[in-house]
Image (cartoon, rainbow, N blue to C red; front, side, top):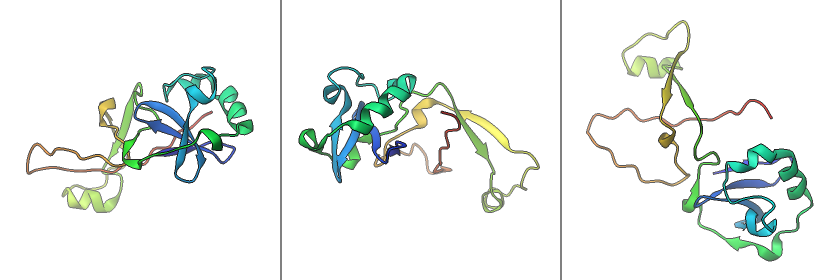
Length: 141
């Protein structure tokens, strides 16, 4: 799970550490590559976003690149303050739930622990499960 920087570089969360792509299939640990200018927290970079993008745009990371396993990727925002979801947001899902499409969106919250990485095995506690796959949109800078 990577997010795209405005400079056509990807950044992500590799086992709880902020990384950027160096080459196809290889990443660089941001804290090490920046000499500590940026910390290891994947979420911490948002507070200094402009500085981070500027640094990443001029960095040459190929020499420090390490291959990685995509199964080790976590969510780019591992501890959001809030997570909102929309129920019955398309006709097929409403019909499957034997409900009618609501006139206004049904918004509900989820625990931040609902976010996982790209490849995660989830234990299902019961035979009756409603599963979802979500798309995230960040609006703002």
